[in-house]
Image 1 (cartoon, helix red, strand yellow):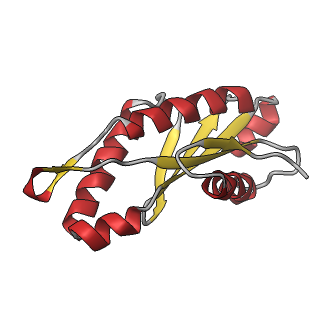
Image 2 (spheres, helix red, strand yellow):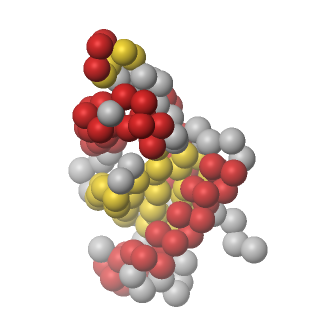
Length: 145
């Protein structure tokens, strides 16, 4: 998909999504509750993606979206839409306990030197860590130094 975008000159972007304080959910409510949260978040993300987007679970509580034909501005709008959708989930877990879930989302767009998804994903990951440092539950676009 990257090669196609480069050949046609179309932009692409990546969202890197990390659930905030997920370890605390597992520690306080158990891994079964964590699994419920992950499934609810995954369904929420799937419900908000276009057919051309690619969503994957990177590991643990992290997800990545590959957004073909999407500028940084468009990716930022989608990132904020996803953040709000996750925040509204409030999944029910053991003993009918309703949990609040939030996500920090990093956003990066394509650059001329990108050869692999890892190139752009590093920038999106960096932006996500910046969102965490600024208080979590926010979207942050990568800004070149």
